[in-house]
Length: 376
Image 1 (tube, rainbow, N blue to C red):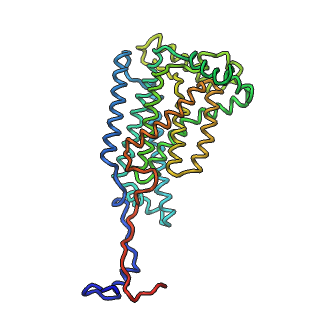
Image 2: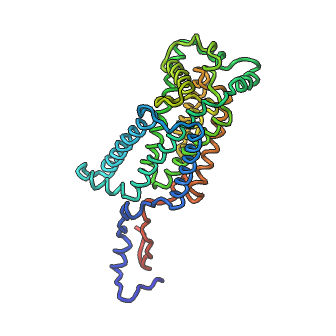
Image 3: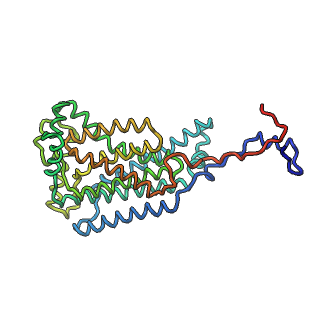
């Protein structure tokens, strides 16, 4: 038999039992980013920037972003998309909670407290800092001797002396298929931007989104390392005769531009617009896409992961078909994706789970029923 505390009436106990405790506001319950994660993210970024500056001094070329087309334009698109997603997040919260859109400013303040705003803003800035380092290191890889003949030899050994790209041309044809694989290949930048920004906005709390964010930093860094480990240009540059029959597409025009840019850089490294964009091993079209797929699976989005798996398969085929990568490049891309996800977990710490382990609301306190209460 339960004993009521002195001075407490039975009616008060029933009222306490039946009345739901008020929910905590998002400002109170949104878990902030762990300090160790912030330190780790900036340490990784600083180390990668230091490597970039050392390589810059070695080749005698400053960091560049010709016309702002490589990084600045991507950063502007990411910020615009971020603002759009934040607005949609608040509007959806209003509609889901059956609140008037007049309450939108209040909902924005509730759903986006400062402890959530600054980590997301930091992530967007850091991501593009790492990306500009990646693109410049990739450009300076042009000064190293390529190993394309070795990679082609591995491909032919796997396929019994046949060239994979030629086999795909014979299988799919060189007209309509070229247009389809062109679209698949060029959809990659859009996927990456939407994935990075969307995860930061919609995965809550923010420390869970940083698991994906850290993995994305690592995939660019690991990709850069493989560029220098095995310098290469890609099949289209070394074996152009295998691709002369393809219908002209945006990809084939880009390939010609890449070769011209590389030649310009090698001829006049001091030119302000000298910048190369060719490196094949490993394929980051495959590596980054695989990272996104693996993280979707880890976040419990199984259907999305399956869809991304199908898309990944299409990307693999497209990279070989259009001649941007050897098969071994794509295999290497998958390997570094698995490693990037593992390093991403180590970066944020084992306490950060991809599953919803941090509650966004405090559970109502449990109270004891009086002895004579009856279930309804």
